[in-house]
Image (cartoon, rainbow, N blue to C red; front, side, top):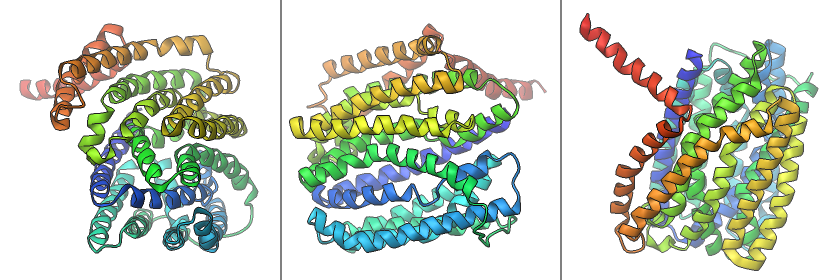
Length: 487
């Protein structure tokens, strides 16, 4: 368990630093580029992001889950990844012109061509990453992420100042990938298995098809609005919606991204050791929602000052979108580990079925919502799909993992109570200092000073399992200091 905690610490630390860099980059971009420029790049990146999910075709998941790795398995993973990734990169370049014609934006063809370069390096990023994840070596993964993040933000600022407009974002993306490529190979140079082979691909491809398609369907909940609004509306509306959605995605990732990379190795270990995955899943869900739900509830009320503080008041229209999407993020957080649990028990086909169901509901609702109610309607489509996702996840977790529905739902009640308390507290702050007229920096300061105390007191009042982790962390830190003092 100690190595899992250490992995969580390094994973979370790296993600938070990377998100801080990403936030800085986003703030700079939002202030230097117009909504139309941001929206243009968002259209291109959303399509490439979907295709990028297929480029490793589950090879990294396969290497993490396998009980024993051999040279043949590693070489086969490289072979399959090279076949898929390089073919997709070529497909992106070929489709660049037709897609630019479809969206009636000529510059998209150049953005697609630049982004396609990253597909060349993907095999020699994903496979080394799998080695490090398998061994819980998230310290090295953290170093790679921070270095690539710094390279990306540096390139973004430099090329925007050189007046490369939205091309700056594409160039920065490629530079970041090149840095990852170099560092991952350096950190895994003791595993000198680079030569691919194209035999025994079926077991990897079978897992990869399920996991990759599932990842694509999940990712498309972020990218589909850009494509739908880009076709039915304007690039400016794409930019506005992407900023509102982006705020909530940023908040969610800041809270959850450190957990997700460790989840599959941890749950796979529980299964290998004949442990109770359902029990491990329940406890993890309580801890996650205890952290995530209160923060997301606060942001749902304080979306306007958050948007103004991060991006400036020219993005005010994104605040109502962020408020609505916050409730989707809360529903999503409750079962963020469901795909990992299903993969760990070998039920990746059930994971795919769940994602297909959720995605079909999402696509229908996003089209109907935007067509009928504009950007707000698109936001409510997220909430509806989040509810469907929650119900479908609980169903598959019950029958495939053994998670009992009612005990699981009741176990989340303390987290819900904490979130409501934090929501009410934030609302009271808004009554005292109206968010629409108060300086956003002062509002953020008020919330930062008040809400952590409210959250901490609420955690102990409702007896959320987080209190155990807080007490343990306190004892580990101050208990050791007192022992040293006595000596």
